[in-house]
Image (cartoon, rainbow, N blue to C red; front, side):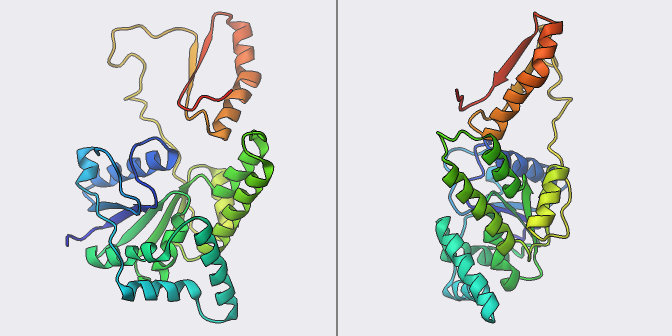
Length: 284
């Protein structure tokens, strides 16, 4: 099988580009491809539907792990010594709570060996779990988590601004506890985690006990999205827009804050100004 320099992995499909971690991951992938790196992508849940050609050409099927790899993965999760075994029991419990099967996760070691992978970049909420067994089974392979948003910080923000009727506080606290436990138990063996803001970087260092947390901010191609670049229409004066998923509590909170703290002043100064809120999942 052809060698892979950087293998991107996730529990869920990488397409369509409708969630933050997918947008981040695909942007980094395309940049690496443009620099002639041999990039592959494998997901535990197969992607349905048609993929862009550049992505389809780099997709690798998640294999069924051999009995040997499954046994080695279980040993890596259990650990040696009483304290390690107790931590291992907690890891097994968290994986079961998130409906992650160890036999399936063990397929990553098979992929790394088959394609002589040099580095694995894991995307999504459960990325640290996917990488844990690899730390013992293939210790020389670089293991990176493209976290972008720190999960603990994210859950705290949802707890602060969430809708108590839509999501009871007991469920929000449970999500927070799972995020904190996951980072404490699964991130210490990672080589690095990537953050999207200084605050996320700070939380990843504290909750994940990570030394290497590079900062890669979310970016916008200002040349491509320049107003009126490929249209004959004149830009609408005194207009602004917010774009994002509107069923995502921090986004909804951001819109409410902007309207209350910023747009009200703008509208007082320019009564004809218009603010557009654009995105899927409209909430009250």
